[in-house]
Figure (cartoon, rainbow, N blue to C red):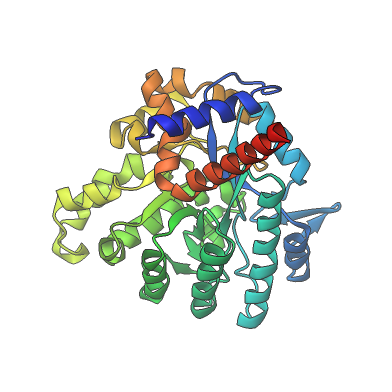
Length: 364
């Protein structure tokens, strides 16, 4: 729970940034927003991703225009005080050479760091890893957390077919655990693209890939080996709130692992879920029943979710989920601060520096 001094600081931060926000609300942290730097788009184009009428496409959907200024403007419109920036799927899994993948990940992470330096009280960053190249990914985790002081690390449900839960990911999870990293997991398209029936992958294959990854983490035992990692899954956990009891039930059978039902269900409900594209009455009722407000965080998914959809989604969370004011505080910012202590530390340090500057100005 947030301490009184920290709550006071948040109140001051809110007062500083409230002007111009379209949605009047207490402090709001968005854990799910994306930067789309040009070097990433150019790398995708060079790798052969389709371009139609001048627009880059990925997984059957157009990659939207993005700029740092437009991102900050969108935050103001949506009443978001602080956002964590990440790169969406497919990350850089399309770069097959490990050395080139490491170089591109480093360039993108340095850009994300630059964005956070420009807006230190508005933006944090999540480390992009050069997976499926494991050794290079571990080095990037250390660089992002120890040198760039990123808020956390971004993972994908699968990276070119390498799923969370695979034993090849054990060294990555060991490193995340060693650095006490906060982890945000975004879905990616499965490699068996025919399952989408020529429809855009993000529509249903992204949510279902979240289920695949969470199921694999359970059945391989990888999650149980690193139970203390704080992990957020996107889009309300995909279909997990609906399928959790089915997964846990089958997992009790010998051929599926023979895991006790309460153990499986507790693990499945032990993650945090963001509410990006999961703000309807039905979705929030399922999430509230399955994990409760104490495991939900605000996610908006800008710019892939346009403002025309994001605004009613954000403003409707409390009514659609029948959440109390205290529960909304958890969803808006308190849970995010518990997951990402580096955000709290960064804001404290920035606030302290500003206070010192003001004091020096007053003295002089």
